[in-house]
Length: 100
Image (cartoon, rainbow, N blue to C red; front, side):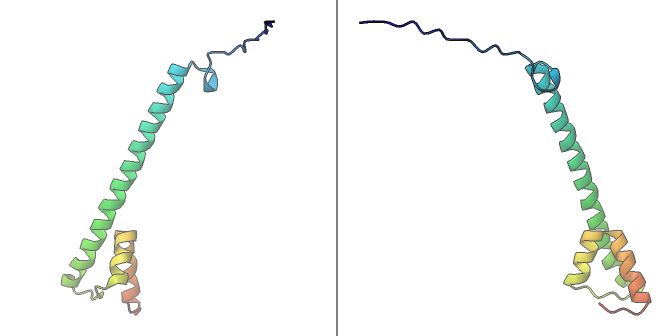
């Protein structure tokens, strides 16, 4: 039997990750970016939920003040999505004579 010796060339790799950083430091940077992104998303979501709840509450409170905006699916969706600005727009449209 004849054995052949195969010359295997080794591919040289560098230990640099993305942005020229070491892989460990690269992982830390990516982790920190993801944490900051999650915090920003949760903060915006919290603001949206608070604004939506305030809009729906204001829609119901307007009934006691005397501004007669009917409570139906359309007005609740407008108040929930646009919040206090949506309720303000509905009040303005009601004063101008628009019916919901």
